[in-house]
Image 1 (tube, rainbow, N blue to C red):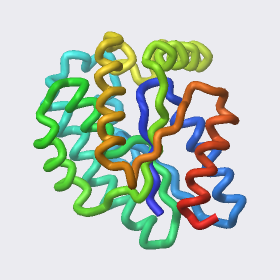
Image 2 (cartoon, rainbow, N blue to C red):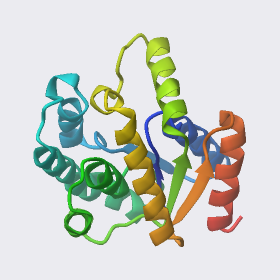
Image 3 (tube, rainbow, N blue to C red):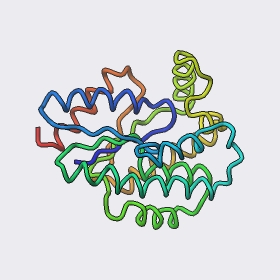
Length: 211
C-alpha cells in the first residue's frame, strides 16, 4: 500500500510518519519510509538546492521542474520496487505538494501541473493521502520551535521564510484537493498533541488495511 502524508510547514508530518511506522511494524508489516524531495540519490542533491535560503530567487518554473525530476526518479528507483516487494510505502510529501505549493502557492497553472505530475508518476498514485491540517500561524510557530530545538534557523528555509498569505494559499490548495479526491484524501486535524493525532491517523490507516 502506498500512503502519503501532506500538509503545510509545522503540520507534524515527520512525527506522524515515525509513529505510524512503529504502529505498522508492530503488525508485522515491512515499511519503506521515504520523502520528497530527497527520497533517492538524485533527490538528495535536488533537496539541498530546493530548500536552501540561497536559492530564494529560484524561478517558480525552474523550481517546478526540479521537483518533477526528483519525483520521476523517486518513483522508478524507490517507490515502485518497494510496492512490488509487498512493502507499505510511507512518503513525506508527493505529487499533491506540487499542486498545493507551486499551483496554489505560486499561482502556476493547476491543470498543467496535474498533467506534468501524471507524466512524472507514470500511474503510481497513492491509495491513501493523509492531509494533516493546521492553521498556518500555528504551523509556522511549531516549525520555528522545531528549528530552534534542532539548532538551526531553517530546516526547510525557503518555504518557511514565505509570507503567511503564501501558506494560507497552500492550505487552501490542499483543502481543495481533498474535496476533489475524497476517496483518496482523509483530512486529519493536526492541531492537538502528537499522540492524539497519531491515534486518528492509525484509525484511518488500520481501516484501509482491513484492521
